[in-house]
Length: 163
Picture 1 (cartoon, rainbow, N blue to C red):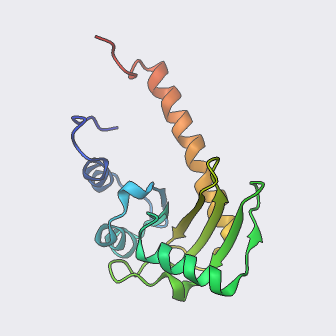
Picture 2 (picture 1 turned 120 degrees about the vertical axis):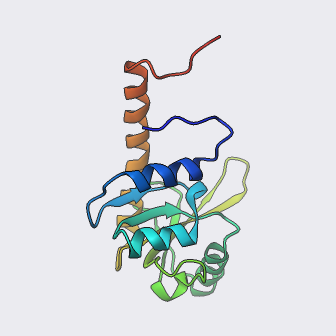
């Protein structure tokens, strides 16, 4: 656990925390899109042998390309666990991003928000040959981990302090 001023970006603290932790080779980090840093992800995968699973920002090159490719191919499947959502399996060749060549598997999720707006989210993984279903099941663990962490902080008195 690391404490820092609220003004410090999560990416800065995350890099420090991960640099100080002795991960086993083949460990997997579930990150949110705020940790998207191609150079750092490449370092983690190549030098530290740590895999990454994360969503990408909607304006990223990979997301834009995946949406266009999905529209062209029209090979949508039903989301494995969420009603009224569709997924498109992204081929490894469609994950080309000059800033990070480590993404090997990906899936595009499409859904309609309550306001009627269509939303697309790409999830990527540095492990090869994963199905979209596997990537989504992996990333879904993040909410369970965050809830466990929230409860741990609460029980140890590390929650918000009221003034």
